[in-house]
Image (cartoon, rainbow, N blue to C red; front, side):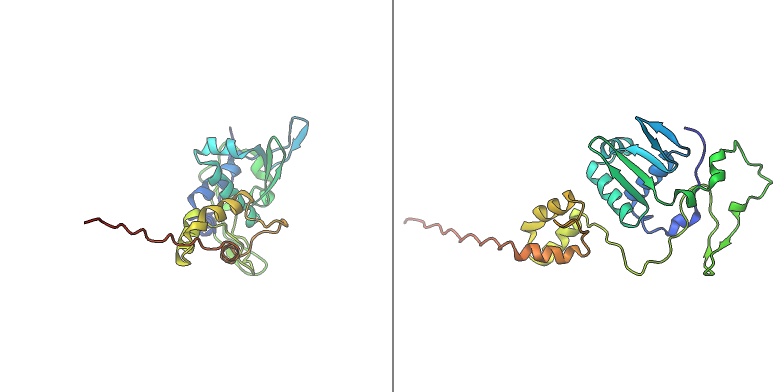
Length: 221
């Protein structure tokens, strides 16, 4: 595979930068996405899209399918990607591809003269007066601050830790498996906003197992 993509220095402050799996998955998608329209099995794959699946990504990145699914869910929650799923494959779209990779990126220059400064080495300023840091070849500038914090699915260990504080470790596996399998959505298809509240509701619907009576052993004289 030839060519290059742009990675901004602001990647260092990206909300998923400290999440190694999600960072790897996003960079892999960015590097694997099509940079020009092309045909595949009768459909047109647009720039910024790729045809893949959890099993394929798991094999390419040497991660479990569960970790791939969790990272994809996180990237979807912050609108980094969109996923169109069929019974055989998924089409993943980098939502801001045209912003991250402007038209000149598709020209694939062989090499830039070291002595020639380029526009992507300069600091730019938005209309709101916020400065973006200079970037190097590859990842998006910081997204505008969100008024509401996006939901991030908890890990199994996080659920276990919270369940321990409530004395209901017996519910960890059933609760986590149920919501993780459903991409952390309710029966009506709405995304979960507060998983701890959901756990409390799950707890209220699940009577606590009764403690087994202590068995006494009598010794005959």
